[in-house]
Image (cartoon, rainbow, N blue to C red; front, side, top):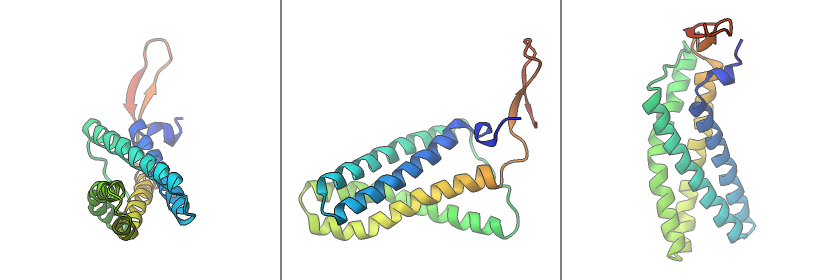
Length: 165
């Protein structure tokens, strides 16, 4: 039997890992600036932006390859899932613009404006990265599809991909 993690498309898992890494980098950046370590803050935030950019590329590739994956949960959890998903999507659309604006303000030395926008941008970016991991967990691990494609056969050239397991 194939473990569930291996049964999920590798790009879906990659996306969740990238979201989790982005969350860690954002928190590290926030802690660094709270400690007035602007170099560590800058490095962490640039790394978070890079990881988020790689995430976006992988996310688009995944949906181009796989398409739509339906949520199978029923009842109240379905409502919870879609509330999280819709808020995640709406806020995710704002993150690249907020992040680029933050970089622009910092680059221009407009640190007061950077700090003010950061109080809005950081919680949004954190929410998007954390909910990305939650959506992944709900979609692929808590309420997975009933069957995943698996390779079956005798190992003598008769292997085939089948649904189920």
